[in-house]
Length: 622
Image 1 (cartoon, helix red, strand yellow):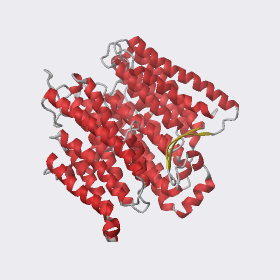
Image 2 (cartoon, one colour; image 1 turned 90 degrees about the horizontal axis):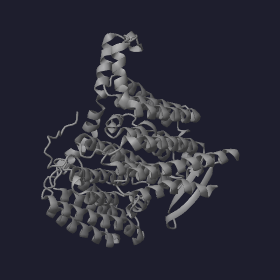
Image 3 (cartoon, one colour; image 1 turned 120 degrees about the horizontal axis):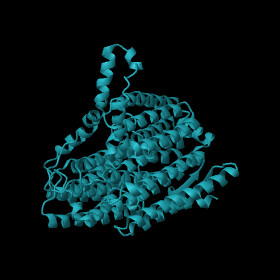
Image 4 (cartoon, helix red, strand yellow; image 1 turned 135 degrees about the horizontal axis):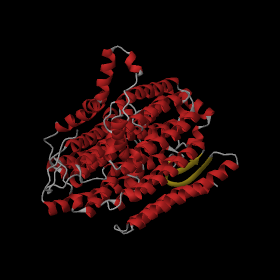
C-alpha cells in the first residue's frame, strides 16, 4: 500500500509531460487529456482512501529514493500519508477536477489555451508533492513548483501590463517565504543531525529531548516556518498580495487563491505541529497573527469595490481564524474549516463574473437599506478611521515597499559604478585571491580565516543587490547573478574541506543554465536590437521559443528542482556551521534575491505589451 503513494505523483507528472506534446490548436484533445488526468487521479485516490479507512487509517511513510548521500548527510525523497494528507488531497483533487471542467469552455478560442492547461497540471503535480511530502526537502520541491506555476498563471494574460507586474510582485513575496523554508531546513539539519521526516518529528520523546537542550534553535525553526506559512497564506504583513493575484484568469484564481495554494500555510503548520505545539511563545504568536489578520482583512473586505478582491480578503480573514484554531490545538477544526472555506471560495470565484449583473438587478428592483452593524455602535471617529484605513488596505503595500524593497533597491543603486567590464575584472582578481587564500588556508591567521566566509558571501549578496536594482544593462544583471553562485561556493569552502563533488553538483547547473540564458539574451538582442529593463518589452509575442528557453535558464540558475542546482543548494547549506547564523542569512538572502532578479529579467524582456504595439500602454498600477 505504501508503494501506491508514488502513483499519486506519477499520474499528474505523466499527464503534464503528455500535455506538453499535444497540438496547440486542438482544444478538445488538450482539455480532454487534462480532465482525464485529474479525473483518473481523483477516482484512484478515492478508492485508495476507502481502502485506507477500512484498515484503520494508519500513518504511512515511505523513503522513496536517495538523491545524494555522504557519511554525515543524506538528501532523500520521502512520502507520508495520514488524515491531514487525506483531507487536503480529497479537496484538492475534487476542486481541480471541477475547475478543469469549467475551464474547457471558459478558455474557448483563447490564445493561451494549451499554456493554461499545461500550467494547471504543473501546479497539480507540485500540490501533490507538497501534500505527500514526508520531509522538508521533498516539500520544498513542490513549494518551488507552486511558486513558478503561480507566477505563470497570474501572468497568463502576458500581453497586458498589470497581470505581469502583479505576477512579479507576488513571486517576490513567495520568495520571502522561501527564506523561511531554507533556514528552517538548515537549522533542522544541525538540530537533529539528520534529514528528519515528519513521522519521526511526531515522536514526542525525541522532540522533547532535543528542545530541552536547544530551545533557542527550536523556537527559531518554528519562527522560520511561521514566516513561510504567513507569506504563503497571505497573513500579515503579506496580506496585500492575494487580491493582486486576481489579475489572473478566474479559474486559476479559484483553484489557487480561493481554495488550494492559499491554504498551504495552514498545511505547513499542521505538518510541523509536533515541533512548535509545546512552545507557548510560538503558539501565542500564531494566535495573535491570525487574530490581527482576521480583524484587518474583514474590514478591508467590506469596502472593496471588486468582487474578486472582496472574496480574496474574506478568504484571508478565514485563514486567520484557522491560525487561531491551530494555536489552540484544534487540528480537526482547522481541517474542517479548510475544506469548507476552499469549497465556498471556489464557488464564489467561479460565479464572480456573473454576480455583478445579479447585484445590479437586485439594486434596482429589490433595494434594502443597509442594516445596523457592529461598528455603528463605535464612536464615529473610530468608525470612520477604521473605514479609511480599510479603504487604504492599512497601507500594507507601502509598508512592504518602505521597509523591505526600497532599502534593497537603495543599496543596489549605490553600486551604479559597476559595469560588465569592472565586474568581470573585479571577479577575476578577487576570486583568484580567494582561491589562493583557500589553498594556503593553514598559513592564514585564525581571525582572518574566520571572517573570509562572511566577506565572500557579502560580496555575492552585494552583486545580487546590484542585479536586482539594475534597470539599464540586462547582461550585467545576468552576469552578476551567475557570479553570486561562485562567491557562495568560495565562502563555504573555508568552512571545511568537503569533496569537490558537492561543488560540481551545484555549479554544473549554474554554468549550463547561465550559458543558456546568456545565449538567449544575445539572440533576442540581435533580433530586436534593444533590450533593457526600463519597461516590459513583450518579446514572447514574436519569439515564444526563445522566451521558453530563457525561462528554463532562469529556473536552472535559481535552483529550481529541474536542475542539479536545487540539490546543490541543500548541500551548500549542509556545510554552514550552526554558529554561522549571519553566513546562513547572507546565503539564503542572496539565493532569494537572485531568484526575484531572474524572474524580473524574464518578465521585463519577454512579458507585457509588445514594445512595437500600436496601442497606448499604461505603466503604472492602480
